[in-house]
Length: 255
Image 1 (cartoon, helix red, strand yellow):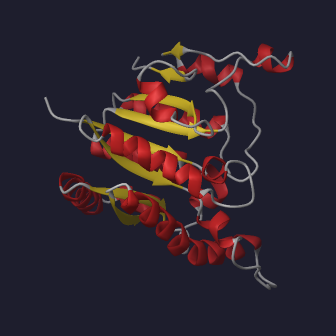
Image 2 (image 1 turned 60 degrees about the horizontal axis):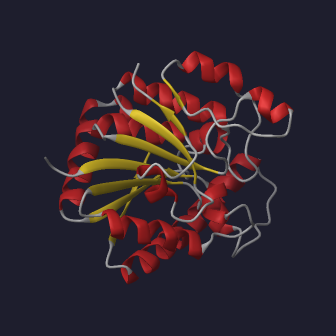
């Protein structure tokens, strides 16, 4: 039996720890866990955060469309985001690589095959792929889903064993418990229609996602025979705690 393959999706709220800045501590926390787990698991990361990284360094003067400003910020922030990953992971003995993808890449058979082959070679050589949408030429992540859909499509293409979506809650809460301000996590479910009835349309403060986009991602993964776990990435050790059953999270199993 080989290593199990996990696709870890981290959104902007997780990477900033709900502040205005990318948290080096959170990226170190992710790297430290991967280093501990690397004998049994191989990781592919889909990471948002380029725009949040740029806002630490620049304030753009503009007269243009808001979406174009965000694309410009993504172009500025992406190298900074990768530098933070590289510096923190390197100290833990981990190597990183950057892959920028667009949704159109998943519509072309040749492109899909190239993505699969490239990422498989990187993983085989212990080089962790860190994937983001190519925001300077595409606006899907900015407008629609904080990379949740991109993570699910990549997970499906690479036939990973688990899609792990890190967010800022202990998974998906029941609607009633939220109304009563005493959140209760939905533990394990295979019927995604049940989840759709429980979530609100609210979006997260830094990201553009929210639970609806995560449920859509889980649907894509489920159709590919992949389990999705929605975990609280704000907590330290969240990957190891989820894998060892110590964390509260939502598991969306294969129907």
